Length: 256
Image 1 (cartoon, helix red, strand yellow):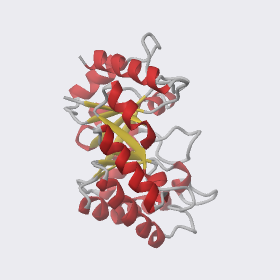
Image 2 (cartoon, one colour):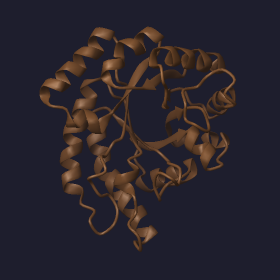
Image 3 (cartoon, helix red, strand yellow):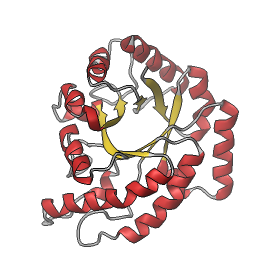
């Protein structure tokens, strides 16, 4: 059965467990930037809550450049070796490569070269992920957030360039809606689909009953694709405890 989690910070671990989620999804860049003491406290928060960080997002912070003439993989490799080791220690199974700032293509830089650079980055990152028992999921982002890889179809194409079982694609229903991409994209990408994000279509709020987003249709498409991994809530809220619990109820009902 598809597991349901939610993107949050470590201090929300107990609230996430109390709401009934299967896992929490953390921010990798923020986790990597923690001092040893902060990391120890985050680890303790998860342990006390009895919940694992099975997924992480924001794989690469924007100070690193993955495309263009300033791209340099050596410092990124050093960063990933520390970051993914920490993620694995917290239970990570999948890491989301969104990182719109890090992958943004400079003006007048060749799109072909940028795709090649992203493939090279993922070929470098894949062995580090593999060594930590982690799979990378390329996240397509809407055009407002980056200027390369906007659809699940494009993300799957990039994963095919890398051709590594530890590199696949993510489908984020909010970005899919913004780009006009239907849920059938999940089916088309089935062999490379590694993770899913969801939220209300327009404002990216936590799922709520009657918000107009077809969560049942999402799960039908995922079932058709043979997907049985994870779906994370990734959105905005005003009252985390109440809205997180309500979102889980909506998704459980939609999942069936």
